[in-house]
Length: 102
Image 1 (cartoon, one colour):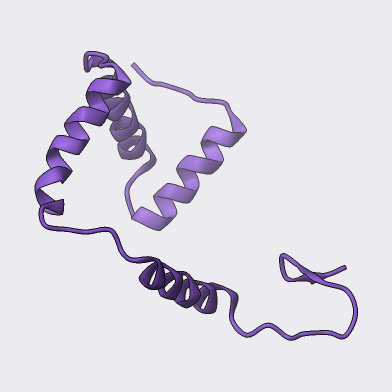
Image 2 (cartoon, one colour):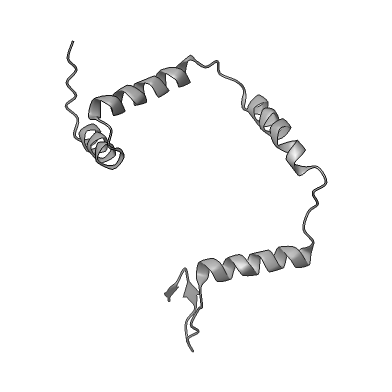
């Protein structure tokens, strides 16, 4: 039985994905429906249980780890600021707000 979908956004999304992935539109719709079916069939678990399971999985990776010192944290933040902000040019008046002078 044929399926006709007349929805501009759905058509646009499927066309974009088909163009970038090389899959057919039919295959993309099939995959999306399978993922949705799989998600819907899973039993719902409370968030606290999901968090506990995640922490149980991650905890062994953190054994022996320590929190960085204040000096180390400041160095990390300074490196991140330099990496993301780049060099900032100072101007004599005004102040810099999110890379825009006001």
